[in-house]
Length: 200
Image 1 (spheres, rainbow, N blue to C red):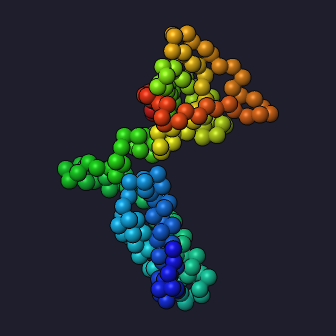
Image 2 (cartoon, helix red, strand yellow):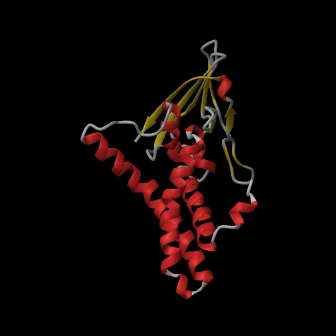
Image 3 (cartoon, rainbow, N blue to C red):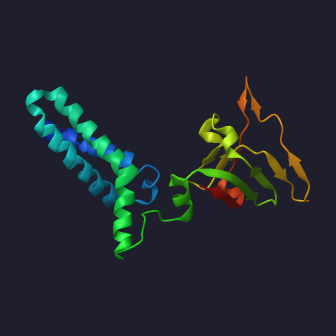
């Protein structure tokens, strides 16, 4: 919650702090769950410093231009960091043997946030059923490309085939419907025993 002290700050600093936090949210979407408050503050300040620089440099063109420049700079730098900067930095520190920590504190978080393409998925449920999506490329027009891996361990997917606990197999039909859309299945994290994924 904002306090009155926040509004006592200069306009440039308020804009920089807001833009910096927005940059942090953008750059670390999906990774923030394991961040402490200090992580959020100091990463936001890193993006805020760039926003402040843009604000000050364009201040002579008016407040509107300064505000826009601050937010665009923060968001652009956050996007570049997320797309290439973070990977480049991790490669550098890993290749010289400093560390190999990628900031993802669990294997599932790493899978969820990967930019690799998923081709096939099978989900083994606690009850013994196995749900298959054999060819994800057929569902690129479906929501999330036919597959959503939730940060909490849940899965939403197109199920093409199901293996029942007694060994019988059922093939799903009518998955795509021009009028009604694509049929997808939600599997809560508490029902997931194992997930097999093929990635490219």
